[in-house]
Image 1 (cartoon, helix red, strand yellow):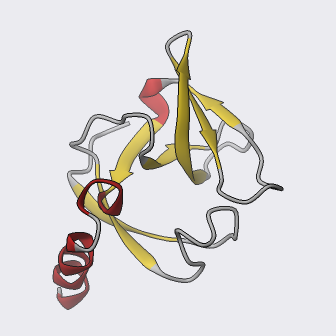
Image 2 (cartoon, rainbow, N blue to C red; image 1 turned 135 degrees about the horizontal axis):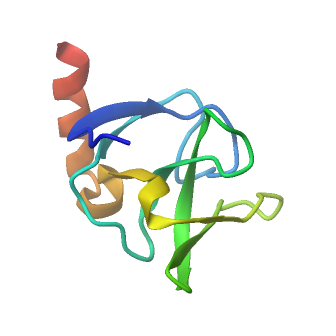
Length: 106
């Protein structure tokens, strides 16, 4: 997978509610190294050619453990190479909305 420095992702499910709202766009960076607590975009290990947005909750055996924020959300285990990017809001808080506005103006 090639590195995409910055891109937008649109949330389509409710597994990350209320921290990520379905239908909204969020800025993502492929340049940041993931860490526990980050919301990330990763290749879906259960469905080829699709992606998931989840929170990193643990690091076990070299793999990331991902979960949603709602009780019915599925848990995933992904290898580091499958992580496409880190949502900037994980690191920047409210400042990420300014970055998103820059993307949407283009």
